[in-house]
Length: 121
Image 1 (spheres, helix red, strand yellow):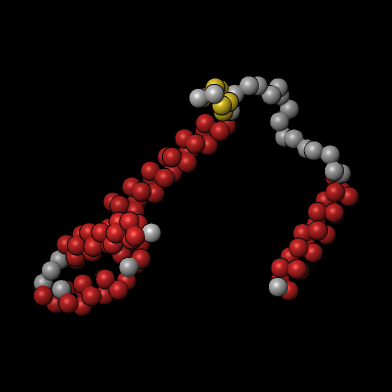
Image 2 (cartoon, one colour):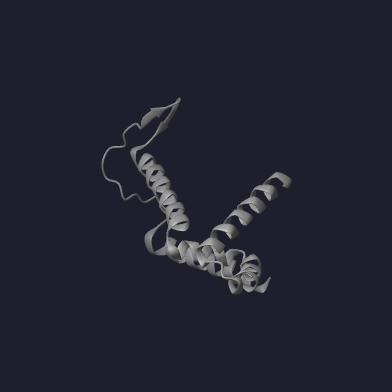
């Protein structure tokens, strides 16, 4: 509680210092004309919003690709469910199963758990 009050007090002080130094009027970086955006299902979307959406979708696809196909992504996903990995490696590894096959089995189990958990919630 003390930290929250201290952070609110610091925020108030910094806000007032900024207002004293630069004033309270609205600042803008843009100097050109403001143009109407593109109409999309009755709403107007600006070019920067379209660029933002495209970049976010591209980054999401890159993260999914990385997590699914890169070895580091495989290890991150394996670390998320350490108890299953521990069971698989302690029991199955000495029996001669390959590590890649164990990873695939583990991913199938966790995907099933995730899907079943979503249905419960």
